[in-house]
Length: 193
Image 1 (cartoon, rainbow, N blue to C red):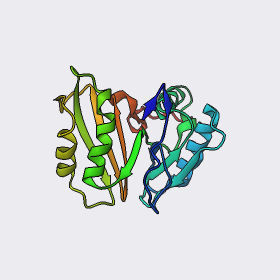
Image 2: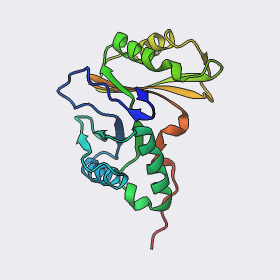
Image 3: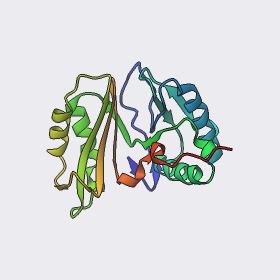
Image 4: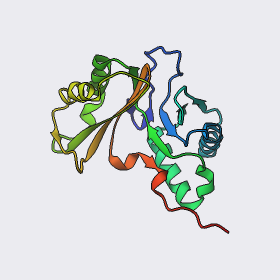
């Protein structure tokens, strides 16, 4: 949860897959080692001398724990990517994670319950489920989460996204604006030469 703009990670889960994390980064498959080096360097440049970045069992997916606010990390990474794209080489997407839960529908929904009030009463939202290494039904996750969020749904142009990132036995949950996810795959390629 975010308290006075300082990130407090959820540490109430156990998993052999990964330690607590507050960022998810994606890379091209086979580029995970480059992604770890890039993200570690980026976080170091931002002031975290000891970020915990690890390769998950899922190809192309990294998790990281930083003492920095993950939303500010994404914004700073966007600025750096615009000015010095080489400094984000190997990273395709960077996603802030507010809370982490076990990958059980009821636990995911309860975690969303803790974050849903970030969405103002007159705002719209949509639930986005990105799942890897799981048999969970996206439809069932969406239905359970939507039952907890009493706001108007807008699937085309929502003000907010309830993001559910299922990584095997653990799930990262965030309530964020669409612009708070960094997608570098959409940037223009750097000119060669």
